[in-house]
Amino acid sequence: MAHTHQIRVRYAETDAQQVAHHSAYVVWLEEARIEALRTLGRSYRQLEADGTLLPVIAVNVRYRQALRFDDVADLVTEVSVDSPSRISFATAVCHGETLCAEATVTVAAVGADGRPKRLPADLVALLD
Image (cartoon, rainbow, N blue to C red):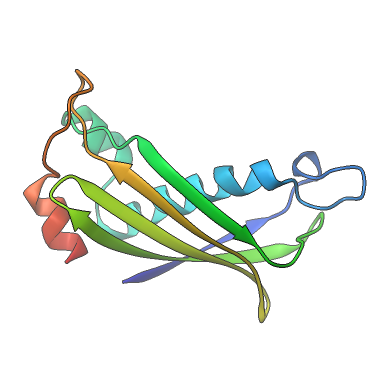
């Protein structure tokens, strides 16, 4: 399953040369993750209300080409279940045909007490 989410680089996300700051990508990746789950029919808010939190345990970003203020980028995200308690979101950040960044974000399922738990079976079924 691949989900595309579009962002526009805001002025506040750029440096003095109007190049998107590396920290903005982490925010965009979160937005893409949440929207990918929503598209599958699972609200992140409802997952949390049902007792499953998905904190980030790893982020890896490879920057390839700069994005600049007001550029529109597509974040194409593929979701995979890595284990009974982990999900990975692999995202390509593209401006037109140009690959600007590649990223992988891994989350782990935990309960409200912070202890690891299995991913909800219905979520796993949606992702498989």
